[in-house]
Image (cartoon, rainbow, N blue to C red; front, side, top):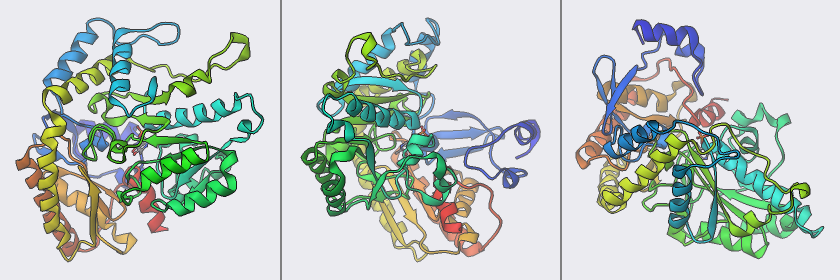
Amino acid sequence: MNGEIAQLDERYLWHPFTQQREWQGSEAPVIERAEGTDLIDREGRRYIDGVSSLWCNVHGHRHPLIDAAVREQLDRVAHTTMLGLTHEPAARLAQRLVELAPPGLARVFYSDSGSTATEIALKMAFQYWQQRPSVEDRQRRSFVALHDAYHGDTLGAVSVGGIELFHSAYRPLLFEAHRVAPGDPAELEKVLTRHGDEIAGVIVEPLVQGAAGIRVQPPGYLRSVRELCDRHGTFLIADEVATGFGRTGTMFACEQERVAPDFLCLGKGLTGGYLPLAATLATERIYEGFLGAHEECRTFFHGHTFTGNPLACAAGLASLDAFQREDTMLRLQPKIRLLGELLADLAAMPEVAEVRGRGFMVGIDLGERDPAARMGHRVTVEARERGAIVRPLGDTVVLMPPLAISKADLRRLVEIVGASIRAAVAHGDRPSLETGGPAGAAQLARAA
Ligand SMILES: Cc1ncc(COP(=O)(O)O)c(C=O)c1O
């Protein structure tokens, strides 16, 4: 980085998942504006946004429909609390989400990040069981989570997270959760058979575990998890913060296995990737478990200042309009097929161990490499020089373009990534800069 902004950044900022000592003097672009699926830096260099600005952009940047909706809302009110008040964008968006979500999800609780969406689901599930009349139900106090899970960075979300080394620093602050191997229903069955009466909920990232390195679950797994939760009378919490809003090829990943969870956690793409908004959807049964006289204290005592922010809700509504008007999901299907064809070429490269993913959620695994070489990170630096922003998860390069990307740009993105992998491997080791976002966890784990 250079120039005044770089100096201010280095003097005052503290970046997420970043070793600041290595960040100093780095060449990170200073992004000034964007057009469609391109980010543009202060020098006018363009980069394809190959990770959708951390997996959230859907329709591209500066989308006319969403821009106009946010501007219109700005002319009314930018923020007003949902404690004791309500507003039109929050109510209308809640209706649209309930209509769109898998059946049975009837209530929308807003917050402002994926972490808070999952944190809220955990707290709601826990409190629901504590408020049940039967003593047996009140024994349901713990959760089952998948190995290598990622549900966010707040302490509840970290407690059910499974990226070990990264989370272990906080171990004394966390609650215990049962862990099972993703993709293996037999293991979940064993845990539920032994501890089922104590389980408040099973939390999963449906179909694909993103931050674990784009780990894909075998077909039928999610359905089995649903059936096991039903058999043992516990809740299924589907964390679709990453997979939601078209990312895996359907609006929600749960649809692909005809699964309706008891809780659905949404974030990232909810506003088309424009503004911080998250939602935890719950069934009417759960909602009713919180109803009672004031003095019964069944209230859900949780809420953030910017819960249901009107600008963000307006962006969310406009994003759903864009899905409809532009037939986003229909137009995505041939692009998913094209991406599959393009990736077959990458998978055949000697430098690539495996390509995995679903829809527009792809991991290109560079195989067992010297952690000190930080090959995944080096690929992202090479890609930047060639005009694309991608991110590593350890030695897995993640591709998650906006759903709106053109076929031509999709081709160019995959070409750039292929060339960057070749260059990174050919150039050998050189010092790296950042630890790599949520993926930094996996990266650190490998480095240990
Ligand atoms: C599955 C999943 N859940 C939760 C989160 C946390 O979301 P946020 O970063 O908005 O807190 C993420 C972020 O990557 C995620 O992938």
